[in-house]
Image (cartoon, rainbow, N blue to C red; front, side, top):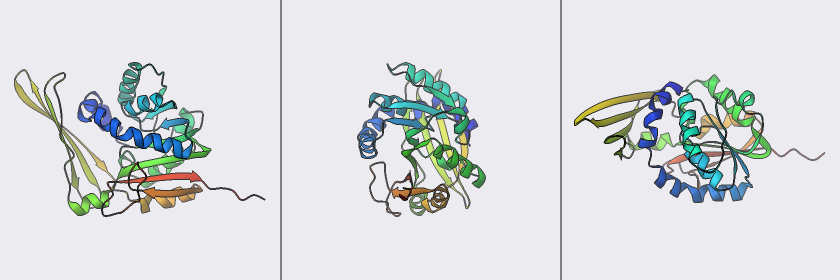
Length: 256
């Protein structure tokens, strides 16, 4: 897991993401998901700086957050304190969730392209097992990551530029470098401090998973899996869908 990458980036992360716009776009999709699957409790297992936690709480969900980066957890605790919703947040890898989170949920989420930060097969299996263990018998595990097959085919490298004026003028560039067995994700921060521009550079490897990489591991966990192309649960089309969204549910046991 890229916990060191996000520990280093935690203080700047909220300046890189346009949260108001993103949450405004995503809220109707999450409301539809909660209605469709009867979700009343949520474990956001890659909660980052906690903005989705506040969104889910505002929607009336019983919410817990977890993230592998202690620095991101500290930011999440700080951000959620600004709301009127008390939200517990724990520092935990996905594999550690059974030991760190004592209950199960209607939905366990790993959203925002978090899964590709796990680059080793054994760790991936342990991560999926840990998240799956926190899904109750009628609940879902929802995984969202980039459709890297589309990105590779198109050669698309740059994410939208973000900027901020606080605490000083900052421009954030995010980009992918495509390598044979991985993708390097770069975050470059250009900051104007005391009239001079400075640059900071963060980079971490990603594993460009497809749904075919994840499906067998979820099937081993006795999960039924549906694959979509967005959080709006649109059909997945490998050439055009921006994301891979996988929804896993417990297989129904036959009545004897």
